[in-house]
Image (cartoon, rainbow, N blue to C red):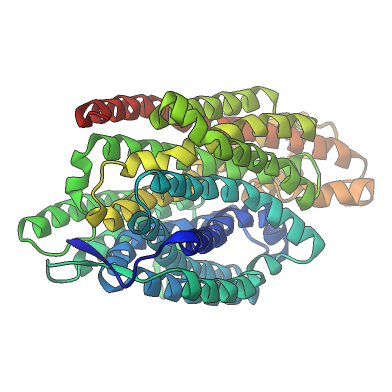
Length: 547
């Protein structure tokens, strides 16, 4: 395969084009995290349960992950700029549907459409960067791309908090409409079309279906396990007119997880077979023979699980347990963005001094240390300033790791395979995002179910039946019952015991959050371990090339 560009982009126009690509990436990365801080408002406004909240947050990443490989391949074949513009149109359409949603089902469907659009945008931005820039300019461009990933992911909560507080939650989606229109104009003016000359025939429909089934079923099982029962069915599952009832021998969750894992195994075997037959495949498994690519993707997976798990749990804790507004929650979480932007700007200087792979390792160590610190300092009465201070450290680590990880992972991948390489890396990130929401969300729900009853038992004057009802409601709403009880005070149904109940629920929420953050920290620590392998592989490749 060879890369083809309709005309060579040079000079300032090339960097203006990078700005448009970065802005397109910013839009979809923001949307991946902006919803998190608005979740408490969405739960109250649309009467969501914890599973629906997880789906609204996670389905975007599920669809994203399932389609990235295919859209990256299609972009290589039919044109990256064309695919990027179509993706923006689809994404904006999903945003309009989301803004008009009045139920969980409609909002989840809108997030599916957004995920399709996002899956078309992300790999085309990265492969366009890889095809446009060379040498030192490529390293700088990759640094910008990585900094946007980390910075926008961290700024999403601030944007969500401000928009939700100043306007309504619908505006977190409406703003994408004018932004999308401006991006299309800018892309047409500054970004040239590029594609690959792909000689192998066919489109890999079978691979697409197997990957969608695998990712979808695994995330379904993880998200719905708490609601449907991990083994014994505790609630019915209804799909159209068919129902998996509570009288079944086992819950629908184990079969879903098993079928998901089997589908992913089948996907890998299918891709191997297509490669052997010299047919077009959406996943080029030969890329994983490159050690830096293999280790780098493992790092990216662990980082995404930890990061997006943290971004799911923290907003719920801040708004519900600490009793602050969505805007204040966004401001506290924006400390991550501050740290990420500062570190992202300095990452290339640190990399020049210590190597990019060492910078990634440094970033992961800082992230892990910050999350461990959070496990010890999170309480129902903690200061937002203390939380923000720890998150600055986390953001610095995130900025160092993300800004250098992309370039390090793709450093040894030929330009002709840049579309496959970038799409694969992006898929791994999105799989991690979906798993982060699903796994850490499940840990949060299970932790709430485990600790809330004990805290309520200690409240004097609260009848056992009422305590059970409050506990079930709090677990189901991911802490969403705390703020209404706080606002009612002693004038509500609980009377004089209401403040004690609120304190008990807030303390239970803090305990559950610490457990969730501990789980996120484990994945970040695994990422740090994997980054050691990445550094060794990178150093070996540098020595081998004689650089």
